[in-house]
Image (cartoon, rainbow, N blue to C red):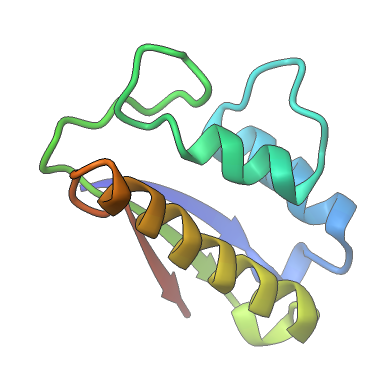
Length: 105
């Protein structure tokens, strides 16, 4: 399973989150450091859009591991969790298997 790891202990703000996400997911240069851009990029994991460094096959899942997640701002963690659910719903709406698994450590 493909894995992207974020360090929750080093995420004190949305800017920290987006900086780590850019690195962990290999987002393109034009990534705008917003939650909408984060959702958009992770909605193309099985397409040829090159929005991340990951290219999943139809049955593959990308595991997002957040270590020390309890040290992150609770509202940001809640938003990420909500967005992962929404992204997976988007995949299901297109008849595909959910593409993300969020693991909090």
